Length: 442
Image 1 (cartoon, helix red, strand yellow):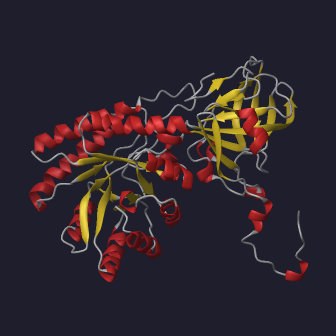
Image 2: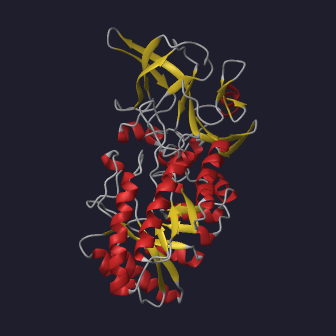
Image 3: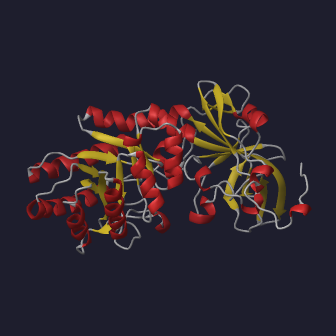
């Protein structure tokens, strides 16, 4: 059993996170329940920031809020001195509502709308990461209308593919994101923005994938970018003030995962950027990174209550939980794998192998296959580890299931940061076909 962060087995044999007994959390808040280990998030944020500071490098560490966006997590990111990445008007609105400093917000996305760009410009956010020629046209028009200047990064696809699942790999040439680094697209983009009176080209951005367990991909991508920087220096007298090398730093979901310490990624990035900057005799660009999963992924644990069981003799035993693909769609979408324990019986030894089924009306709603557990009973609490990234952010109301609550735990205290949806929440946007037929539901 691998316990993350502050998680431990307490004197009752229960799983404890942040000094709080998970059994008590379930009694107070119900299940399914997302629980975040705030101390672990803080530790990760400081590891990234401190490494840059120790190396004497000017940098920004931006939390990629698509991993988990809420007012509370945005405020926590601000407490830790992070910048913030957003990828939609909704994430931007959340950040502004949370009181996050607009000048530390970076706006990503491959199809930003006029409304979203206008919202970003009016809020005077720090940077827009430009993804395509359509967006350049929109920015030119909108900044001129508003008589406003904006800092941008141009996103490139460097032709480096990280060794991850195809659906979460974004840095290779065949990608919906960014300007290709090798077919002239990026040069065309530079020429369009370099001397625009309202657009300031701050630098270059790339992101090569997710769940990356080595540094080679970052090195290769950086080398390719610097070969282009050498050309741009001669052709345009342009060198980037900022080089954003993205995120994708891997975490441990299961025993098969072997991620590097987070500081190792930073140290290697700094090493290669320094080396190539010196070779070109240019000022060292400010280095930006975008950790998302690596900040919150293994800080999150989802608690479920075990319900029904089905035993198929000589084949499989199923345990059904009160959640599933409605609160964690990653197993169905990515074939993601997780580890789990009985949170109320941590001292009991596993004596059978079971598969964890969700409650959605889909045969593909399977959370974990072939999980070693003690013989479980209805009412036992299943704790699934490392659900802090892309759990709540991808949660949905399939089968009209209510989205779970979210709790932050730290120093023996629990704080509800997102309340559980109610049935009334589920229908609050619905409009009736026949008003006279509406009933009062309880």
